[in-house]
Image 1 (cartoon, rainbow, N blue to C red):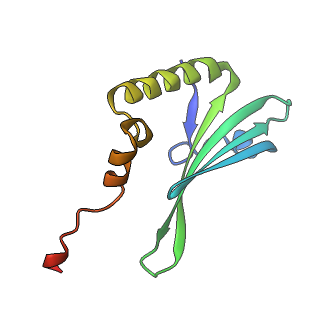
Image 2: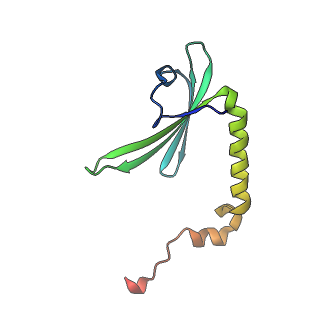
Length: 119
């Protein structure tokens, strides 16, 4: 059984939430940033946290960040990566990316359909 902990739901395991930072890789993707953080336990065992951070505007007009976190342990790396790769392949086979559609479609799909006569 895969052990993954979601920050929003699991507040019981404080030891693993306070792991020492070993390595971090941020990936910016549109309005979101994904953080891949390697952490170490007291026993020098490594685990991975994956955090999705999305900036939004609060009702007061201030910027706030919504964050969601997954804890992934090394004994689950293989199954997790296999599942992720299978899902990505499934999507790629059924819905090609903009680059795979060709340059004309990519340009056409990058603009909104605006009728200037209605403005």
